Image 1: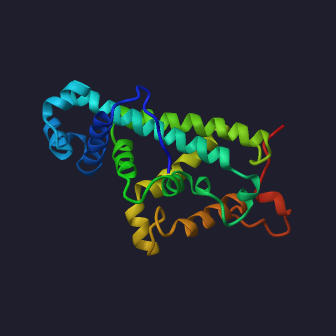
Image 2: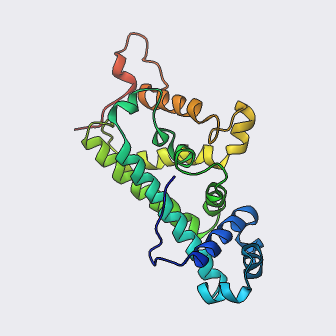
Image 3: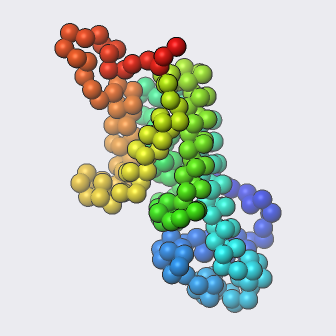
Length: 224
């Protein structure tokens, strides 16, 4: 599991309040949680929450900053561990299955982070900011992996990044529906099954070559 150090070296009590808020926000949504609720769940007085964070908005910002930092840490860790040979086989790591795979690989099963991120993505400015950060990181990774030969060159890295993110977020946001139709949780016990199909799709493609066509016709290269 990952350890994400707070920028301010917060005392344990402040970290507890942030993590308690994260859990409650994930369960009920930010609007359904008060400062008093956070204090009660943490076993402290509301005044202590105010002492550490000042306002509920500041507490939410602390939660968002923590989750954003955790996501970036997971992406960096997965990228640093990536072996080019993994990308061609069925046993690819968490990065192969995108965001869902990262959560399954780096977070405990009972982590409130996935549920909170789902709520966050459907919210206003915070959700857009999170998507933008993921998008920028994905574009950067596409350029880096293309340079090392992991990815086939593309004429439009930005559109590819958006496409990959949409694929990731679709299963993430519709996790319950996917679990129902497959009979396994793609972010839980079904992660290996999901990762295998993701890699088959990305590495081999979906469309068959046209009759009589070249084997590579389904995979056009970017223009020089």
